[in-house]
Length: 103
Length: 103
DNA sequence: CCGACTGTAATCCCTGACATTACAATGGAA
DNA sequence: TTCCATTGTAATGTCAGGGATTACAGTCGG
Image 1 (cartoon, protein in one colour):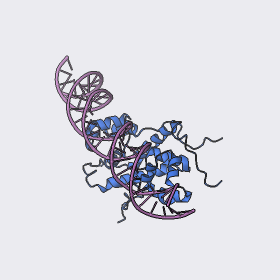
Image 2 (cartoon, each protein chain N blue to C red; image 1 turned 45 degrees about the vertical axis):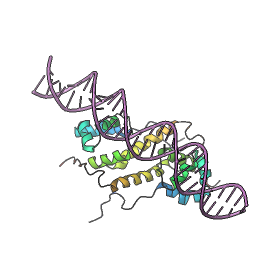
Image 3 (cartoon, rainbow over the protein chains, first blue to last red; image 1 turned 30 degrees about the vertical axis):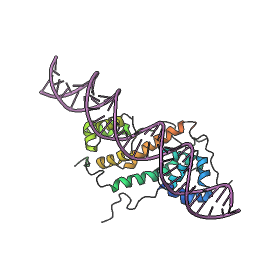
Image 4 (cartoon, rainbow over the protein chains, first blue to last red; image 1 turned 90 degrees about the horizontal axis):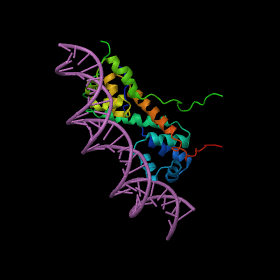
C-alpha cells in the first residue's frame, strides 16, 4: 500500500518563515525598512514574519514587485497551509458526500 | 519582440463561471441541491456562480470533497483573478521600487 | 548610555464571506 | 391556467481578519 498522495502530513511552512529566515537575512534589511519599501506598516511585516497573519494577495503582489519573485509562490504557500488547517478539522468536511461521476 | 510573459492581458475567468457553465449543467443539479450537498446556503452558491463573491479556501475544500477535484484548481483561478485586479490598478504597486540583487 | 530594532498590546476601521428571511420573476409540469 | 421549483436579489446581522496608529517594554550593539 503506498501512502495516498493526499494532503501534506506535516504542517506546510508559513510564507512568513521564508521571509524571516531567508529573505530578510539575505538582504540584511530590518523589518522597519522592509515595511517602508513595501509600503505597509511595520506591524504588518512583523506579524507576518511571526506567522500571526496570513499572506494576502495584496502582500504577495507587493513582495513580487519588491523582490522580483512571483506572487503566486507566496500565495501558494499560504494556500497549502490553509488547506492543511481545514484538513485537520474532522468536522469541517465530514458532511459532504462525494459525487461519483459514473458508477 | 515577444510579448513579455507577464500577467494575463485578459481578465482571468472567475471560478464561479466554471461551476455555472460546466459543472452544474453536467451534473444536472440545481443550485439549491448543490448548496445543500456543499453544506452552505443557497445564497452562497448563487452569488459565487454569478461571480459576486470570491472562491474561498473553505469553499474550494468543499468543492474538492464533493466533486473529487483539487481545491488548488479553484483557488488558483481566484488567485489569478485577484492578481489581475491588482495589476489593473496603476496606483497599487507604483511606489514599490524593485530591489536588484547584484548590479 | 543611547538609539535602533522588534515584539506586543490596545484601538478603530473596513471589507468580505456567510446565514437567514423574504419577495419577485420565470418557467415547466400537471 | 395554476402550482411549484428554481433563481436572482435585497435587507440584516454576525464574525473573522487584515491593516493603520500609537504606545510601551525589552534587547542589543556602537
